Length: 118
Image 1 (cartoon, rainbow, N blue to C red):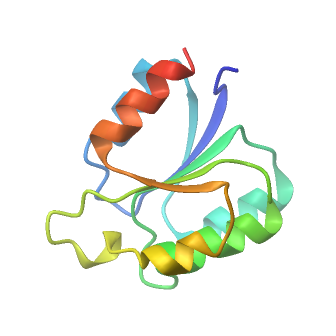
Image 2: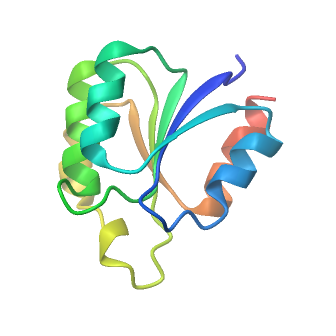
């Protein structure tokens, strides 16, 4: 399976995630907040959603849970390489209860995963 259409949620701290997605052949649609991601996910289909940072309105876990409610089987990948960035802190037990479609990876882990989809 190829990831042809991926939503990237990034309020500005992407750690090169967009470049990795494009290099892997993904078509990337970038939004800058969790609120916009939820709104777009209600209207469009994606092969996956990658969360890096979500802005002030919703944190990563809240955004991931809302997206999971909308798109239950679609892969949601949280890139948690924060380097001290509070925005990328994720409560592992909260995400664990959300379902199998949510994964928390480092930027390096995302790179390895993308190689599987080429």
